[in-house]
Image (cartoon, rainbow, N blue to C red; front, side, top):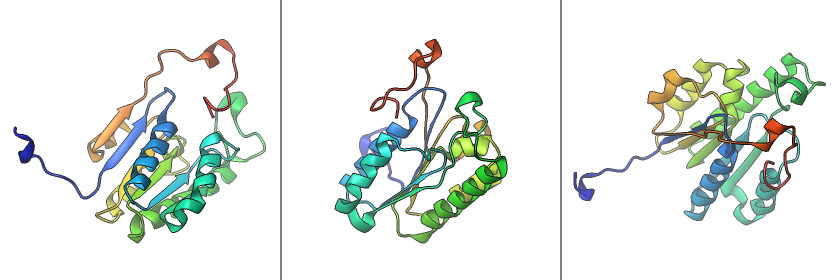
Length: 189
């Protein structure tokens, strides 16, 4: 097929999933590309409530982009992650935070105000049943025709892969955490 035979889409669904590092980092890179292209972006965070480098970065650049960049941090921390779980947060509080965050994501995706809506860690929220798979399908299908979605986090439902236009599985080959080393600021968070 010749290059001139290819078409463009008004919007796409991008999925970054898998056990490896880099899903959020890839979405931040996508955000940078979109903002650099003059797009309006909503970055909606489903899990990470603690202070991480990408959140500091977004806060630092928000004044430059004003209304072109919305950042919402709605998570309550890791859910059902053993020693890393947010122990002072009940399952009901996790679920309520995820549902409130979902409402923000759905509002952004259906408003027509954003060219790209990034739902960071939404796949984890779906996997832990804090957000239903039906809600994820609703988010994908109800977005405005010109709004692209980026869905990150482990365990994207395999049966929903046909709804994605671009899907990348981040595969861990090696990580020092497995040898009992904590995450490094600037690298892991």
